[in-house]
Image 1 (tube, rainbow, N blue to C red):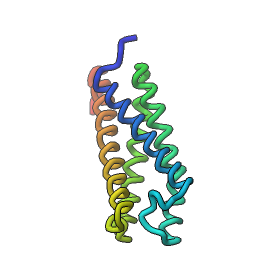
Image 2: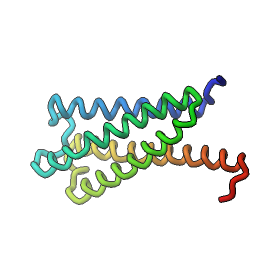
Image 3: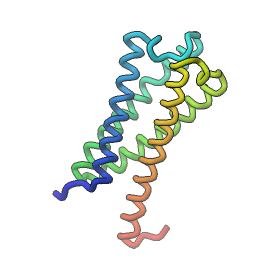
Length: 146
């Protein structure tokens, strides 16, 4: 097996870091959600309560993608696409709620929420773009028409 390219190594590291940060966020939420919550309203708590499952799915896809990619398994591209698509949807859902409810203006935790949205949105674009380029290169090499 040939070692993964530096690009794949960096991508896999970014995926692992994002997965760890997602788990860390929800661990802090479970311990004392005031550590990360930007609002204390029941509506905000209900909104945030919908996120652990999709965030867990994203973290799992990121870890599976990273592991597969560094081992040269093509299945990693699938998990990359799944994580990128889910991340984009999640970031846009979070962005819409946060903008409608003024969450970003609520102190340090509001700023943290803005950083989270930007990181998830940006990483989803980066991961998705890489996966598309990988699939496109494979299709071109196989002589597929677009």
